Amino acid sequence: MTKGAEAPPRGRRLADIGPLAQLRAGRLGVRLPLLLVGLFLYGASMAMVLRGTLGQIPWDVLHVGVSRHVPLSFGTIVVGVSLLVLIPWIPLRQKPGLGTIGNALLIGPSADLVLAVLTPPEGLGWRLFLLVGGVVLNGMATGMYIGSQFGPGPRDGLMTGLARVTGRSLRIVRTGIEVTVVVVGWLLGGVVGVGTVLYAVAIGPLAQLFLPLFTVELRRPDGGTHNA
Image 1 (cartoon, helix red, strand yellow):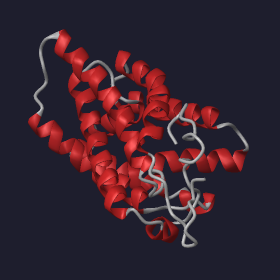
Image 2 (cartoon, one colour):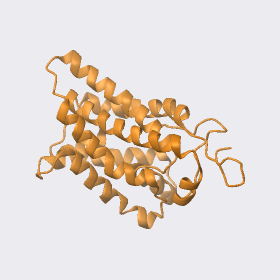
Image 3 (cartoon, rainbow, N blue to C red):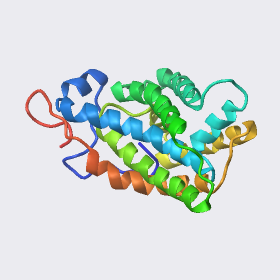
């Protein structure tokens, strides 16, 4: 779960179930579109912040830094990093889901698609609009894809797995991971700026706001719910 996000109110809590149970929990007609739209909007939000050119999302500092050294598109690098992040899931014994794989494979292409049609604005006002709008959209997209209850993305799963194994709080683990990727990305040529700070400060409250709105209640085979 994104830093600062709390579980939705009782009756709409996130279920801790494996991938097969996620698929058997019903309401696929609602959950699958919610997942796909959330992942597309997540990639679109990344593109908006990038085009704002006022500093990048922490993980995008790394993605852009890597792009300075390899002849690949931004979205392709996002996919590659996501797949690499899944490797530690094996010793951490994390449970992947359809959302995990979708997050790894779809966010990057959606970012590339929006980057192809969104031209960099010249005025500061438009750049601020893209930055703030991108951060808010990212929070909403986070609530949508996590609320669909198909499993966390690679980076969120790494965070929760390390927190469980080390006994540290999610806040400490998330901060440690993001500080590390920002430093490495900056050393590779990524851009740290006001957008990086804004995202770090705002994404937790935004995810906490949107997650309860989009969390879908799951059904158990006995007719009860996983969320109660």
